[in-house]
Amino acid sequence: MNVRHVAIIMDGNGRWAELRGLPRIEGHRRGVKKVRSIIDASIELRLEALTLYAFSMENWHRPRPEVEALMSLLDFYLKNEMKKLAADNIRFRAIGDIDRLPAGIKKQLAGFESITEKNTGLLLTGALSYGGREEILAAVKRIVKAGLKPDEIDEKTFESHLYTAGLPNPDLIIRTSGEKRLSNFLLWQSAYSELYFTETLWPDFGRDEFISAITEYQKRERRFGALPEVLNS
Image 1 (cartoon, rainbow, N blue to C red):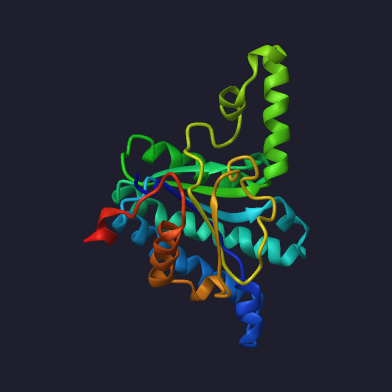
Image 2: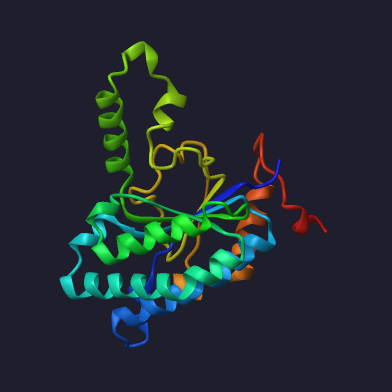
């Protein structure tokens, strides 16, 4: 069975900049540029889904100027990449507390989802204003609001109320920058995911290491998962 879904915690932008005596926002700019190469590699490997942890709930607690700069970067990325990604047959969805994002970005995200909804290629998911615990609580509230009885609730029902409803659980979760934790990312969905941690900071994480991570995943003892055919050739 092929690798279907890879999720990435893109960490280390600020440290990358600090190590070079640059403003933290420059690290975020470099990190944004790195996204395209990973998307291209995902298409090459014929992955079904790629999920990127772009902005966590905890990120709202960062200094206001940094948050504003991150929102500006997100706005710039959506304006400049939306049509290119749509032309590559990519489907896009955003998950998280989207209502907390600036109105202009919410509008762009909705437009991006709309123009790509009929595409049939890679499903690219942006986790924005996202927190795993918050997602679980939101799912519980939806279930309560729907009036479901306890004996009507099983794992399948619960998953249908998550932000990721319809998305396969990640086979592999990659985290850059040397930290070895999930940091509130896909807590329900990661129950059986394989984890790959690397010291590489996100702006330095490229296609070759991405493929190496997937190759290492395939060498682990699991009952499911196989090398994408492009790697077997």
